Amino acid sequence: MILEFNSAREILLVRIKGEMDMATAGQIRQSIDNRLQQEKIRYLLLDLSGVTFIDSSGIGVILGRYRNLNRTGGKAAIIKPQVVVKRVLETAGLQKLIPICDNEGECLRLLTGANH
Image 1 (cartoon, rainbow, N blue to C red):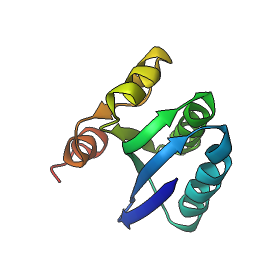
Image 2 (cartoon, helix red, strand yellow):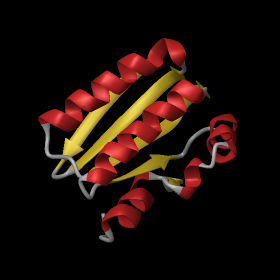
Image 3 (cartoon, rainbow, N blue to C red):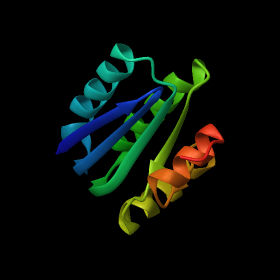
């Protein structure tokens, strides 16, 4: 599992590569939470295009970060998950809470209402 972070203004982009499962969920959660605490983040973009597998632990990581941001007026979105991952997210009903976008620009426009 590989995590890449990019932040600008109030936006944190996290690119996740590999599996989001019980074995990796704790590390992913802690790494994202550390960045959210260190920086004043309002918008979290999770690029899941490199995620090859997700289970309930991975979904829990996404939901937990969404809830934490939502409490402080922040928002989250998911960028281009692979078909198998998107199917799991949709089966769990995640798209009802967190938008799933085709690209970073679409997610930014959706979350911020601005043209990026």
